[in-house]
Image (cartoon, rainbow, N blue to C red; front, top):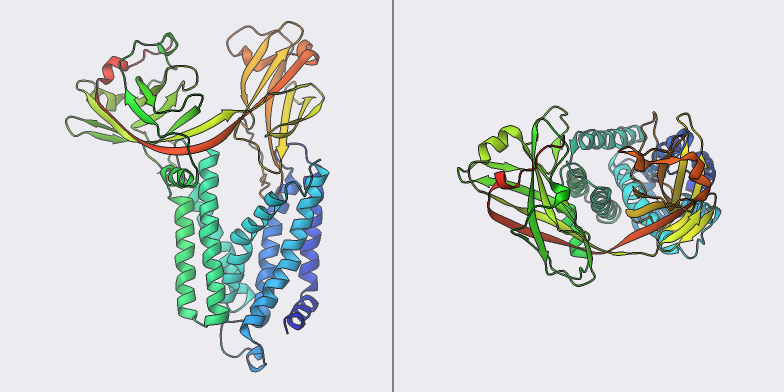
Length: 510
């Protein structure tokens, strides 16, 4: 019976199946030949159209034997609901997941990687595709009467979530925090979608399945829109095994020369609080990111750094914070206070408390390459250095790609063999451009990141010249790629008491 239902569905839906296969083939070809981290306009549109086509195909096959109502022809036939569910699952595996897996293998092999070596990453991508698209679409189709109702829900729900998500922002949101929230939302929505399908096919509980679907959609949307960075950090820390349990304390220390000045901001005051981070194993490297921070004065004036706030460009933020100089130098907790807020706090000691995310990492091996070459960089992937030309004069681009993902902190530095000069400070993925049209490649099995150094006709010595490369030296450059590999995460509570802010305020840079 399972094969009978499967053959009937394939015969009825051969047109939509062929359309999805054509879209997938075109997308795979575009992705396979793409060198840059950002896809072209055609590939960007295909990354939108193909998921919509897959979702529509999922709805069509589910509604071949619609579950909503009591007048469907198949109810009078000897269909067992368990076998009907198995036939639909087999259809989705053969018509969506199998072609997507083949296309991913083609792209990975075309980019110079072995699909067998990266089979775990390819299977993980299929699980994400099921959780983010196939299972939710199948659950929605099982709850609607026809394709029109399905399309209304399939378009309205994601558009609403994206609208509210884009209107909320975190002041110090990092890509890892966003990826963690997205992964948790996919797990929640995919799990609920699977349970709803079981209830609709096996238990025949329409009211319970609708309530569960609504609850799952709300939970997933809440994670994407309202979950603060602290939520993602706690989840990452719970799944990792950090090598230590850090403790953050305020210490007495003479001011560093490097922190005698800060960038001038007319409406902000910058204070540098000297801290120490204890209980760190010898040889461990760490980065610290603030999750929450509150400044409490003796007069009960309380000012908190917002975790996620509505996007209002002209709204004042009372306090912001970040940690500075945590590698090879003494650490500081940097506070940026609105000038009116500082005026209320400067006369008496304050209490500064909150939570921070400590990331442990180790420094990877440096891979050196000349301009115009492609090298395999351990724990990074395959990196290519090339000289490019554009409307503003061109420069040097370094692109690294890997099916396993590129470490989020991968440093790129240049050394001139002609005069020994060195350029530092670039990270893969630290720059972006704004272009019209969709330019996301979330269906790609290969992650690409790049760093760009602008070329100049003159030998710049002025401030800011460290980002410019004399064009005459490009041929003599050696490029070094060094990854920082995360080894664990920890969430730390800190409480700094009796802090005289006026003592630690930095004068503005002249």
